[in-house]
Amino acid sequence: MSEPGDIRGRFAQGVLDHYLSLDRAGAKSFTKRAAQESLAVSVGHPDYQDLDLDERATCDLSIAFIDMTGFTARSFWEPPDRVTDLAVAVLTQIALIVEESGGFILGLRGDGVMAGWGGRTSDPQVDVAMCIAACAVALDAGQGALEQLLTMSGIELVQLKAGADFGRVDFVRTGTDQQSEVNIVGHAANFAAKCEKYASSWDLVVGESLGNHVLDRTLVTAHDKSPKQYQYRGQRRSYAFYAVSWSRLLAESLTAIDQVSGRSTALLTPVY
View 1 (cartoon, one colour):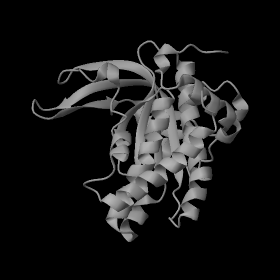
View 2 (cartoon, helix red, strand yellow):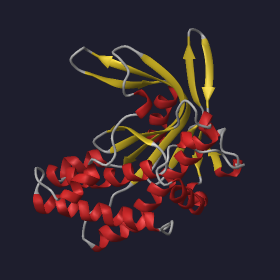
View 3 (spheres, one colour):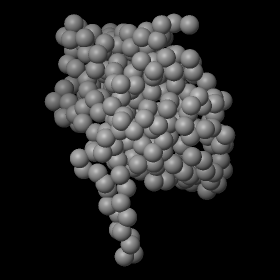
């Protein structure tokens, strides 16, 4: 078993190596190693990939969005190929952390990753714990080792942020007979994306449902814009969201990911 801290060094070196390999070889033909890393994680939850058109299935899931901050402005000013190369390099390493923590990549966007932990038989406490662990390790790796390596290499720094929530989601194959994909619908997914928007660089913001599964309440603090107010057909409800002190969980997060070593959270049992 490798030292838990190796995850951070591998993240940083992986980003730099991948970025430089893309720069040297071009967008159409980069090194075999980089290509294998890019394709190592498949997109979608494996339990729901075989749904027929309009067929749906449900489960409780921890969902996180881990994004690069300020990437829209960066893509405006910098050469498109270099922006793309850096996004590919960073997102690949985030995806690998998700995979190692027992999660699944549910979607890849231009500047971020949508990931999930859970399934039909998983324990919510485990799903939430590994979701937070993955976010914490990704944020720490980006803020620490990666910043140092990019600075030494003369590459403009990358900033990350994350938002997450927990709850029921529906998987449904949407589209036509010729073209379709499995779509994820539900408040947990929607609010996780909203939490990511509320987060500043290097922050992890989580919704009320996920926050309620954090056993140590000193780790979560009400966000200054919480709660979110919803009004529908004359009824009004509020939904809280929290900032997570993820740095306090870092040592445990690194150890947990190292021990999980890519096994789905559905195969794990909680230790209280």
